[in-house]
Length: 207
Image (cartoon, rainbow, N blue to C red):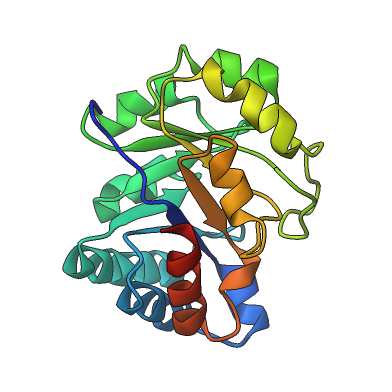
């Protein structure tokens, strides 16, 4: 999508993390959006039950009302049902194949973890790319090798697309990640507890 831009703060609502803090996904989404987030990804690594899809549809409405882009992780079919964007990993459909389901209008994000994947992503019809983990992270069960700020800075020139950095990013180091070339920083674990207050702090440090 020509001219696509990413908000500098990119919250990812992981259902496992929310459950750990005993927060319902729809409640968490409302807090995140009320605090001013302009993009929100729904990340659900479990079975996509009817309840999960219903949560997605409710969050999609909240995002539309807030003027925020809603992104569904991994599942292009569910994203299309919800009228959302989709974010794809290296083990999901490629953006090229996803376009057959999504059409030309859906925003597609694509995860990369190293130089080779970032170069390969240049040939895919993704609207933005993610790179990480930038630092060590506990939000992924089997994380890829750490990228670090030096390689982020070096590899930034490999893609003309908006780039979101992910993995171990905190309010203390976010400014260094943005200075190294990222257009946006993605946050999973540091949204809780107190998602609303956390989001306001994140928006302040990434402005």
